[in-house]
Image (cartoon, rainbow, N blue to C red):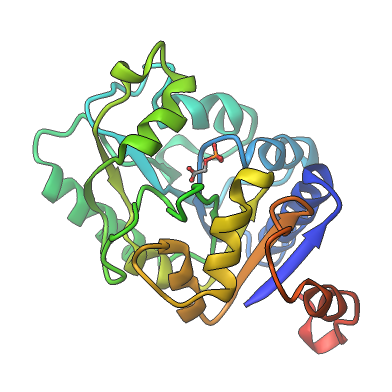
Length: 256
Ligand code: PGA
């Protein structure tokens, strides 16, 4: 795993944007996995500013609430439209967000997996992380081999996400999320984490044992996973000096 520590979230978001920009320049038909939440907001703003060509890109979002129509302001369909899709030239039929309104959720989940496979798999998966270590909506105790499926949110996650709704009572209990197995199949992962709230989950994911109690720890099994952190999110790591030296002294063959 690579751990990149930046002074603040602005600097870290700029690094993340440069990783995406390079991929899109090298592979104009790249397939991206995308998150929602506060964490990627600056990254998306920077990607819009860079005015990249998205005409051949395909995207798959990690998750969506069950029972929220796409036009609901707290749906991840709405989030993606407002924060990214409305501002770039990505054709609508190349942007995929799980259908939380589907009657037959298991078949929608199977189709989502099949669509990812049909596009040749995800080249770069961007992730956030919950304070409990969740990635996508894979809550602690999620199977490390899980695929896209329906999940039940913990009360902690519903409380954390109540800020996007009128009240906690309005936060759905159920979601569709890509599985941890789905995420492990991607070619490259870049997990972003900012703020003190994330420090414990990050330290356990990077330096603790692989455990379903911290779903992000499964990324230790991924051949190309990076954690891109600000100082506060990195504050509980033990080997920060080593991570900084590695990043500052990358030989050319290791860059990219
Ligand atoms: P956040 O959420 O980016 O809003 O902190 C991250 C997550 O819960 O995965």
